[in-house]
Length: 534
Image 1 (cartoon, rainbow, N blue to C red):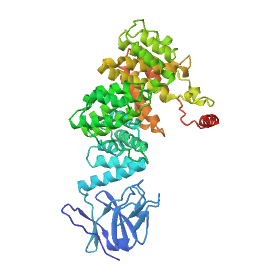
Image 2 (image 1 turned 90 degrees about the vertical axis):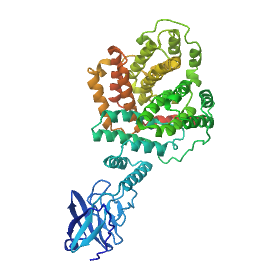
Image 3 (image 1 turned 135 degrees about the vertical axis):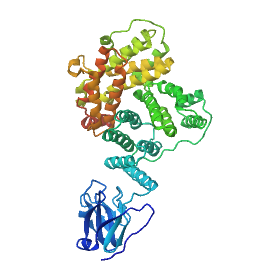
Image 4 (image 1 turned 30 degrees about the horizontal axis):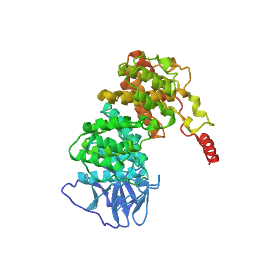
């Protein structure tokens, strides 16, 4: 037997006897149990080697793997390959833990002491980064679990995900960051439940990894100027990223906090009917993330948020919503009674905007409540047959997720316009745009009784718990489940019970209805129609 051994001795070494040399000579590999650990021992051409017996991929016993002459160990389950000298994974996945060994007489001893903290932390971060860049879902989960077992703050996984992604989002924020804020709410609610908390972290990091998969960096301008709210808003309106970013950097340099930027960001988000409401939603989620993860994420999140508002589609500029600007200019000059809910849900975009203006001297909260219920009933009455239509124009590509935004945007309007009351007109009129646009894709009748939740607190809690094991292949779907559930839960506490019934029923229907995401035949039809007109 070749007795060449690795023998790094440190003060922290924790040597334990394994087996005799004679026992190992009988076999190329043996499994031994030492102090609760499963250790695989190998009699290699280079000497005795020891490693974790469980493959770091899915736990297959490596003592039953295949060993090459050059000390490469192959796990026969998924063909992962490890260099037994270093633990390096030649397949590109998790590293294998190897252990120093030495001979004491005819006994093989193994040092099973933990590696120094700094080395373990660095290894976990490096492995998590590799998994992040590959969007390796299960591996991301394992690395976050290792981070928690190390005793570090598990939320560091989210901070790292932001660090690795914010300059790889070409047009700024995506639903990944917005979803991260909401997953953190559930994370805190499931304190003490390690499995549920890991779901929240895993979904957050993996969604972010997916959204920047194979994306290069899109660096932000480095210039720094003093922050001035008017100049900052002018730069965003002019789609001047360089000037807006320089001002934001200057504000951060001078010690400004999110609350100092919030008035300008809210105003910018509502300056147009931006991205079907995404911009305002993202402002509220940025506040949550910075508050929960700390000031170290403020710069990347705020720069990325600013970029997303600059690049946002300004949908009030398309013909469908041209009435918005006129309605905004006419705000505050009439005090007609609010139309009833059933009446209002019959209005298209222009009539919905006019109804808002006609009642604009009413309390904004009253208009808000009415529009919130109208948008909830729209979701409750979405014409599900719309999903199966093929021969329609691109403008008819409306689905479940469009309807959920009527409520998640409303939730953001209540939060931000309550803080900045001068922006109620913009928020309410944009809610009217939602209701007027979506109502064209609803059925006149809806089945409230079928979807009614009889015990709000219990049933909403049950629906929210389902999201922890949502089973959806697309992050965009699961994150809309989550966003809507939390928005409905918040808004229900602001409404009378009768009105809350509609919100809860709408959420119930959305989560429990079929959702068709890929429209292969419709896309083919629309592509042929488009190309035929070129």
